[in-house]
Image 1 (cartoon, rainbow, N blue to C red):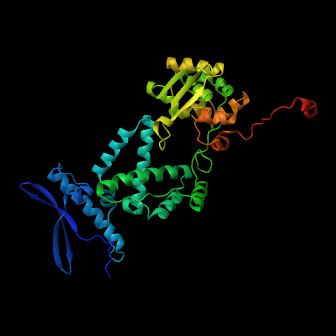
Image 2: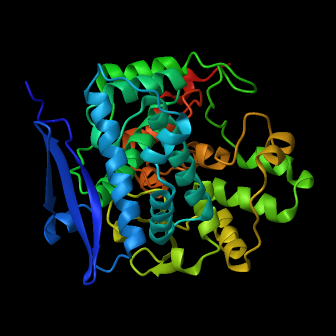
Image 3: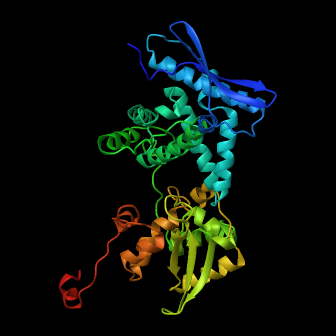
Amino acid sequence: MKDNNIPRGNYYIRVRTTGWFLWYQFYENGVRHQERVDSKAARDLGFKPEMSVTDAKKLCTQINKERSLLKDKIRVAAKRVTSLKTLDEILFPQDRINKFQELLEEENFGSEQHLEKLNSHFNFIQKMCNELRILPIEYKQASKRIYKYFIKEKISPSYAARIVSFLNRWGKFASRISGNFYDEVPLPRGREKSAIADAQLTKSGVNTELGVRTESLPLTPAALFNAKDKLIPEQFNWLLLTIWFGLRPEEVELLNQPKRFRIEVNAKKKVNVLHIYQSKLQNIAEEKRWKAIPIIFPEQKNCLDIIQAKSFKRPLHKTVRKYVGNGITLYGGRKAFVDLMLSKGQKLEDISMWLGHKDISTTWQHYKDKEEINFTEVPQLAKLIAIK
């Protein structure tokens, strides 16, 4: 029985005085058949009329390699050995990688650090797809194998979600060039997500708890002031901004870009408000990526002077660990923001919005210090519960 899913034949380029044309040939019952591919079908495959003969032949060779690899996979009995280098050239041709990275740079409106993260995700994806030997057209079908790879590598569920999202981004791009339909890989859920989380907890490594990068300890104003003499003023100011505004490290960097933040007066409340762009948010409309933080405390007003004077500089991670406290990272100020604001009588739902969280449960689960003792004092009961 003939398997209609097995790719037949190959594409090739014919050159005539009027230009080049895409042709297709295949064998059936020992007879060779040749057909010219119409212009629409050629365009769907990624061929453009303005392409040079050399570029058209190069794309033709790439498509034939992908079809050949897919054919070898479908025909399990017809096994062949492909070197990693050859496989890498088929799955991730350099010219296609270059175009994709150019697209990332064009679409990036965040910091250079954000672009570095995307390239790191792409490196992980290339390594994974080479080991699993999967083409973009196979990603959805290979979802379970991809999840198992996450388990083997012991990555976190949140990192796995980012990888899947970026994998789909690459898959759409590569499939569009190859003229194939792309079916998205779903995010791991339920048992798969739990298995990924459980595997991460078994990871071992240096300077980590079970090898997993642990969350930062909170950096309080008092702890920062204890380290003030050990830090240069600009580094101290940088950390101060994270404490009093609850900013992510990349958001502090955006305070150097006039188009990524603004300070306005709210006429109704009669307070200054810091509006800042959240470069981390990628799946919502750009105009909805802004958050607003009211300036209501003297310390925050002092921070506005720091911003306007541009008197802040990002410290190194090792500087913070050495002089501020082991276990504290550049996220330490943000981690302390919830309890700092609660101690000053602010509501959790407002604090959640200042942090830029879409769901207040995120604020409570990941940013509230559960060991901090908070309660609302009832005057008439104060004498009864007071410790003598």
